[in-house]
Image (cartoon, rainbow, N blue to C red; front, side, top):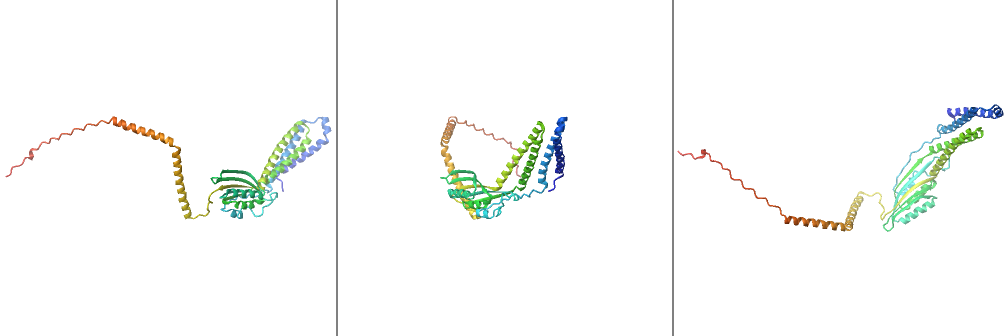
Length: 354
């Protein structure tokens, strides 16, 4: 793989530095006699440190320019009505590559299952048996609800070896009725290779700094090199931890399971008539529940209602007595208006007849 121009420059810089180191050794006695210049020593060490940093940078650049990056596939998701269909139509391939193979794709497989059962205890035992049979381990477990009311819920987070992922999903489907199942596959190959390249570059930089520490002639130079080594060591530990975390996620798939206890299993693929019947039944149950709640509320609040009723009755009684003792005065009738006098016209006299 051809190195970038930046790396070639680093090599050209490091070559004369090694020559300077050899010359320095051969003429050490003469320098001591004549008195070595502190400026030249610091220049020599600083230039060597710069060469080490440039070489380390070449390693990280080559990881991008060398065509290491693989194309990441988008996360895939699927939802299925039954566990059998999910196991047969899983996005996981039939034969999974070995997660320790450096040339294999680094893919993280996860699943989320929502299921129910009328026999909660039997379903729970089946799930726990599947965990043991597939070599998985329980990362999180939670149980809530009351068995008397047949209203229990269980939540599990299971880490399953990737080679037993499909087998585990099929075993979970036998535990109860799977309402929905979603799966994801995340390709982290490029990120994984990038971390590996950074680790290699940092290890090379550490070796170079250790060699420079052996050649340091002054305490100031040694302290400067140790500071660089401390920073490199911190980055090495950080990237090593990231690499182990990626290996753990690739080797063990995460499966989240929600198990609910029900009196009747939820039907799938219902017709319009069945949905209408369910709507009527749900409406009737809701009305009955409302009446029951209303009666219970009245029973709980009867002392308050009694006090309020007494206060209202007293107020009504006092109002009636006050109206009876103090009747409203009757207004006198208004006098009738006198009839208006209209004088008779003289023209109205009867005319004589001839």
